[in-house]
Image (cartoon, rainbow, N blue to C red; front, side, top):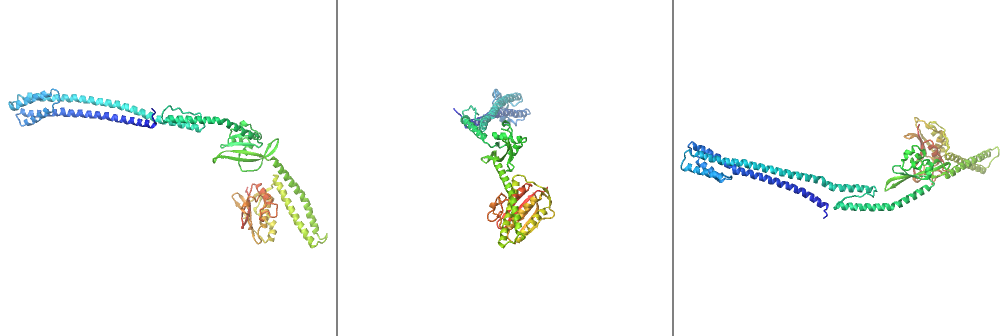
Amino acid sequence: MKLRIKSKLSLGILFLFVVIILTGIVGLFAINKLADESKNILKANYESIVYAKNMQSDLDQFEVRNFSSLGDFEKNLEAQEKNITEPGEQEATSSLRDLFEKFRQHDTSASLIPAIRTRIYLVSELNMNAIVRKSKETQQTADKAKLYLTILGTLSFLLSFSFLLNFPGYIANPINELTAGIKQIANKNYSQRINIDKSDEFGELAEAFNSMAKQLNEYENSNLAKIIFEKRRIETIINGMKDPIIGLDENRNILFVNTTAIKILGIKEADLIGKYSPDIALKNDLLRNLINDNGNNAPLKIYADSKESYFSKEILNITAEDKAIGSVVLLRNITQFKELDLAKTNFIATISHELKTPIASIKMSLKLLEDTRIGALNEEQTKLIGNIKEDSQRLLSITGELLDLAQVESGKITLEKQFVEARSIIDYANNALKVQAEQKHIAIKINCPSDLPKVHCDLEKTAWVMVNFLSNAIRYSNENSEIIMEAKNVPEGLMFSATDHGKGIEPKYLDRVFDRFNKIPSGEVGKSGTGLGLAISKEFIESQNGKIGVESTVGIGSRFYFVLPIV
C-alpha cells in the first residue's frame, strides 16, 4: 500500500498526539490513585485516632470522678464503631464497648478505667500502625507512578526527538536532491539522475525527473553531431574570408580568429583563442587598436601581403533578447580603394597645378589688353575682358581649393604653429572682406575682449577658415544687415564664430554642411563655389585638435564656429 506524503504527515502528527494523550492518562491515573490512598488514610485511620484521643481525654475526667463527659465518650465511641477498617479493630472496639457499658451501668469505680484505657490504646495503635503501613504503600505507589512516568516520558522523548530529527529530513532531503538535480539540468548536465527509493510523490517526481533528463540527454546527443558540423562549417566560412575577423564574448575573451586576422596580428591561434583580449593587447599595438571602439573611423595602415595595406574597422555588437552576448571586429581591406583615391588626389593636384600656369598667363594677357598703350577698347570689348577676368579669377580660386584639398587628402598638411592673438585672426578676416561687405552695405560687428589668451595655431590656415566663414556670411546676408564676428572663452578652449542674419539652413542639411562637394539647395552655402571651402576648413581645424560646427535656424540666420584648445 502506497502512503502519500499527506498521509505520512497525518500519521506523524497523530503519533505525537497519541504520545501526549498517553502521558497525560498515565499521569492522571497515578495522581488519582495517590489522592484516593491519601483520602483513605485520613478517613479510615486518622479519624479513629482522633476519636481515641477524645475518649482518652474523657477517660481522664472519669478518674477524678467527673462523669459529665460520658455523653462525649459515647459519641466518640459510636463514631469509632462506624469507622472500623483495620483487622482486630472490631474486637478491640467491641471489648471497649463492653467495658464502657459495665463502667456506666454497674460499676463506676476506677477499677475498669485501666482496662478501658488499654482498649483505647489498642484501637489507637492499630490505626497508627495502619497509617504507617498505608503511608509506605502510598509511597510505593508514588514511586511506581514516578517510575512509570519516567519510563513513559523517556520513551516519548526519544521517539518524539527521533521523529523531530528524521521526519523533516524525510521531507527536506528529497526536495534538496531535486533542487540540486534541477540546477544541474539548468547547467546542461543532462547525465544527472536522482535516486529516491520511495513510493510516495517524491518517488514519482524522481522518476519523472530522471525520464526528463534521459530525454534531454538523448536530444542533446542527437543534435551534438549536427551542432559540431554546423560549427565547423561556420569556422570554415570565416577562415575562408579574406577580411580579418575577430570574435569576442561578452567578457571580451577571444572566441574565434580567422586565418587572415592571425596573419596580420602575428600571433599564434593557440595564444589567442580563449584568452582575455586586453591582456594580449598590452603586447600587441594592432590588437589594442582593433578592440578599442574609440569612434575613430580613419583607415588603419597595416603591413600585410608584403606591402602596406589599408583597412576600415567595424565593430558589430551582438545582442540576444536585449542582452549583449559579444562583439565581432571586422576589417575590410580597402587598399585598392585607397590607391585609387591616392591616384585621384595626385591627379587633382597635378591638374590644378598645371592649370594655374595658363590661368596666370590669361590674367597677364588680360592686364596687357586693359593697358591703353596697346590700343583703345570699345565698350563691348571692355565688357568681354571683364567677363573673362571674372571667370579667370574664379578658375584660379577653384584650382587653389583643389590644391588645398589634395594637400588635405594626402595627409601632408604642414602646420606652422605659433602663439597668436585672437584679435589678429578676427582682423585678418575683416580686412580681407571689408570692401565686399561695404558693397552690400553690411555692417561687421566685432566682439573680441582684449583679455583673451593667445591661441597656439597656424595663423594662415586658421585665418583662412575665418575668411571662409565671413565670405559665406556676406554672400548669404541681406543688404543693410549685420554680421557678428566673435571670439570668446569656452570650457573647451577659445571659440571663433561668424553669425549672419540670412535665410538659414534647413535642419535636414546641417549634418552635410562640411562634406566635400556638398551644396545646400535653395541658394544656401556653396551657391557659386565648389562646395570644398567648408570641407577644407574642417580639415584645417581638426588637424589642430580643434572642433568645428554650425548652428542655424531657417528665416533667422546661421552661426559658423570653431574652437581651438588653449595650451
